[in-house]
Length: 114
Image 1 (cartoon, rainbow, N blue to C red):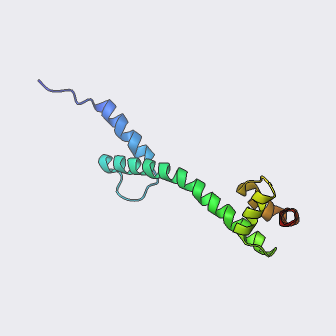
Image 2: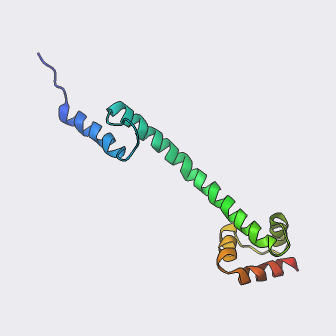
Image 3: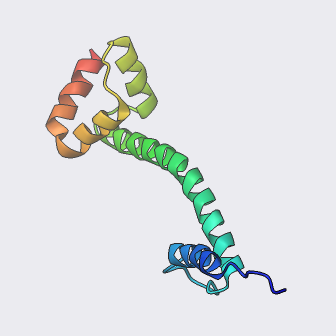
């Protein structure tokens, strides 16, 4: 007696992975390799979602540092002075102010220096 090959279900499963690797480089028409590439991409997506938070924080720090040096301070001195002056602005908003409103940022630095 012949066995059932479960064709439609298998084809659907394989096409699902082939659809997910559309646009990937390399030999991905092979189902096994396509599946491995999808799992690896999910793993890197998970890591990089967390990495993106670190990258943005370092970008904000770099922008604040560059803006503060124009006013004769270093980044660490500025952050310390901010905690002393009890100015509660996060790095994201500080970086945004430094880029978009340099005069406003100069006022923040002047207030912190006092």
